[in-house]
Image 1 (cartoon, protein in one colour):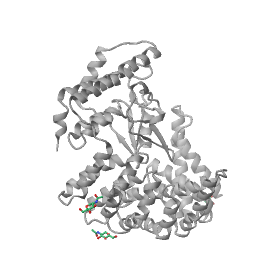
Image 2 (cartoon, rainbow, N blue to C red; image 1 turned 120 degrees about the vertical axis):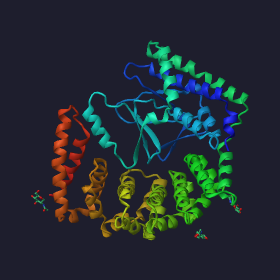
Image 3 (cartoon, rainbow, N blue to C red; image 1 turned 90 degrees about the vertical axis):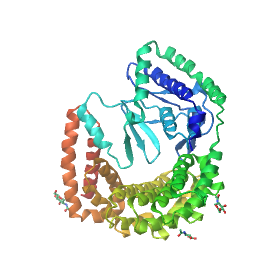
Image 4 (cartoon, rainbow, N blue to C red; image 1 turned 45 degrees about the vertical axis):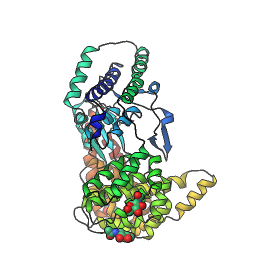
Length: 490
Ligand SMILES: *[C@@H]1O[C@H](CO)[C@@H](O)[C@H](O)[C@H]1NC(C)=O
Ligand SMILES: *[C@@H]1O[C@H](CO)[C@@H](O)[C@H](O)[C@H]1NC(C)=O
Ligand SMILES: *[C@@H]1O[C@H](CO)[C@@H](O)[C@H](O)[C@H]1NC(C)=O
């Protein structure tokens, strides 16, 4: 299994780490604003616009284009650094998992001290400075960040003690301070060693496999009757990483991998269904070609069967993720979803015990689908393609079904949930539903009481926030939404 260790000597590992650490450190000397920096790469040519989402292509990183990530007080996406780090990491994928992880994570280099979170909806890592000036507002921030779809990552957990010590040493040794420009120039010079690093890997006879080759191996591993269940799951786990990239997902399709995933959705093993749905969801994300093939391959029905039958929460979670990826920006799938009774299937999740963790995800999906259609209808664009899209969306009778099936109350009842972030999402959804649910909401005494209670709660929190100097705070924003809703119900 772990031929990687043999290929990548300890010395090479160490020099790579030192290199990465020195790169991280170097950035940290760039500004007085912040002691901690992360490296990121934002070269435009490496980022593909795909339905507004970025994905990093396979091109080698040009050392000259590496840029510095400046953490601020707000959340910013941290882009992974493509190129040799990734490739080195990938090579070791089924060998030295640990090394892979440290290289990959260092590629996205989030030094300790920053708040880091993983946005599960976009798959992007986001980072910001901790709010050091105000402990209270830090707590508020923590509250805010208690999101079901945003996982907080303790940046320390990625950095082994060894790495931290090495970083500390480097910090001691290098205490240069000069102008921004001079430092940037220095950064560029520092990145030259990437070429040397590459040469070193070549000397070590590390043939870098392409993603395609790796996917072929993983698919074969998964499909082989000789593979044990845990080997198959491991193959799926690794595949999920690759199919995020649009081009890889297309290869995955042409290799027959997609159909294997769809077939695995009715496996008798829950863990198999879970991981197959995960890979499927990743491959489907913002990838129209895969979306079309998947719906033709019967994925929609199978996902709905999983969601409609008794299954462990983990399986349903991933099935809902795959379903969401399938439906977003794909009106044909949305139409089929409605035809197949998908909305009822989601509605029944609210009657099932133990599925509370899915509520907000379902509401978020509905919100996104409603907004998707509204935004398109609102857009003044007469291009032919646009007209066709509008035409396709006009077939999606989502809102009437939502109202008819009683979603107005299902959604507004979720305002009783305690988390601010959940409420934020529910309030947003109630606002878009207002136009269609107004009559129901007007007569809903329970909602009236809930809204009044929420208003008092957020008036207090917003006042406190303001006393702390936060004029346009989070709670004020929530209070604003609540007041707007109350106003509209008058
Ligand atoms: C999976 O294995 C079967 C039987 O061994 C084979 O017929 C099929 O082509 C394989 N599928 C893929 C995608 O490799
Ligand atoms: C899954 O469903 C397909 C048809 O939809 C069927 O051919 C296959 O045998 C099923 N597999 C299992 C394990 O039930
Ligand atoms: C909602 O409650 C307020 C008092 O908080 C009351 O004045 C109002 O009439 C109620 N509205 C409805 C529709 O019951």
